[in-house]
Length: 450
Image (tube, rainbow, N blue to C red; front, side):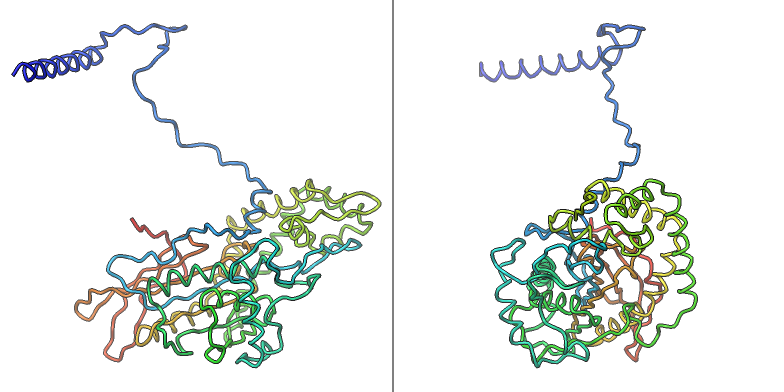
């Protein structure tokens, strides 16, 4: 009883002290020492910092590292996150090729020494790399549309050929394919064990780097796949427009965009001085240097940690690289503001979007589908012209479990480099089984998955 009374007494005393403290603070009876100029040196009101700040200064070196997209085994993404009460029907992946050797070289300089053979003792590495090479050796004679049947199935040159896929590019796609396998095969059971050729649609442009990227992605997704069940379709157009490529308005947007690029470049004095200095080093006219697109070769040096080229007149260095890369980033910023390239890319993507909707409609009536598009120009789907290595857009097709009055909800969610976007609309299930979309899927809006 004594301990109980003591406890109650202490509890009452604590409540009294708390009440007195709050009262004194409320009536400002607690003295506060004044600072100079009559300003309180210690305010008892907590002030939240102003979130409005100046935009951060763009770091060209940091942005170049993002472009390199060096493979990391600790990848995290929004792949496979489903809206509530929805079931996966089909997945459509549009993805760029992996890291490649440059398409251009800086005149009168040595080509960057990059080895395009696939070896286990060189970084970056993937546990399935040796198995991938072994499985590709069994590929000749498989079903490929012409001219894909004449292309090598994996890179294998001690000194890379122009535009050839590198080991980094192979590892990027092996890792990405493994991520898709963990999410869409193991978690969502997208393809059954006895899947048919119709359930896995593969299409690529006629470049060795896109075909090899597709095979690496496919092997990461389906290790040791059966070559007899695989059929790669060839897409002759980089826009994936098939027989609907003619569009004069689209070309007008492109001409205006090219004019904008030219005028924007003329206003950049540091860029002109940089090109002039580089032209002096390699002893060629400035126009010839610009035509050689030096940023393509310099990015290869940067991403593969190869020294920039030197001549008797000096060396191309990191400062040159920073100026050119900074101009590229500024150009991208103005491109987004002017929206000329956006008009071009929107019209360019229209045919493949229509084809995707058509495949989604067929998938909604039958079996689950995985559709892979390997392109050299996924930038046609985007608002910029320099997407990072392995840029991907994944469109997922979900069906609601709740069907009422013959109306069911189909939600299309899109991932751009693992960041969620949503395309939502109501489709009416007609008696003939045809699904009529009632919205335009061209614009992507953020998806709230909370």
